[in-house]
Length: 278
Image (cartoon, rainbow, N blue to C red; front, top):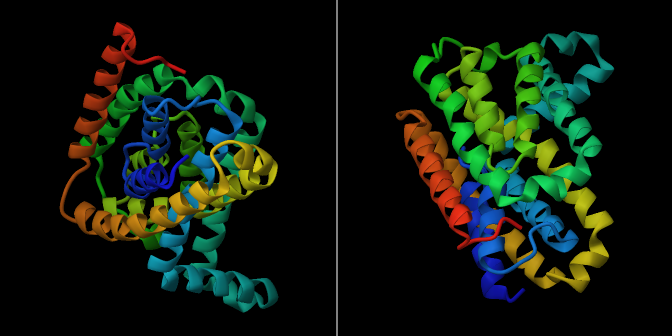
């Protein structure tokens, strides 16, 4: 992969990672359009690794929240009196909510990296998951804030996050939808989606970097992978800032309309044979 193409992939990843439109779906579509074998080991590893750039952007942008949570967990482990701290409870709720996607991801890793990478799945997921997103967006009460999130809520949202292992569903779209249906406001579910992304995407990126290092070297190449990751970080940092401001004043309708339009267009291209599914 040349560096200009790597920059393009990094920009797409950084822009779409936290929007409820599926970054993996967009990367898979772009990889296919540019002629890459989307279920090849180096390509699937590249897709996972460059997401760590977006994770780092989240950690830096929300550094105060992450620092409070980490310190609260450490203090609570050694002193029971600190366990009344809301950050202790919220931190463990995030940890618990991150477990389901790790288990499901490992159990179905082969299918996720091969069968589910088909553009038929991507197109179908873009359209079909837009329906529960629309329902949640239209009916959400939004009576609850971030301080009221419990381990039960994050466990339910974490289970919903597992659906995002199908490219096109969107990890942020799944978590935001589940959060809205539980009664939380859009800003709370968006911030929680950022929090839940860190364990899931970091673990996936590290695992792929370790297990597919040779595939990356022989295929896409580490220089392109590193460049794409850096670009992903820069673009994602501004994307996070913009999204938090956007959801404070708007619904998710524009994202839902975009998802449906892209999914339907992709279905037409696949059905006509202009684009191959793998």
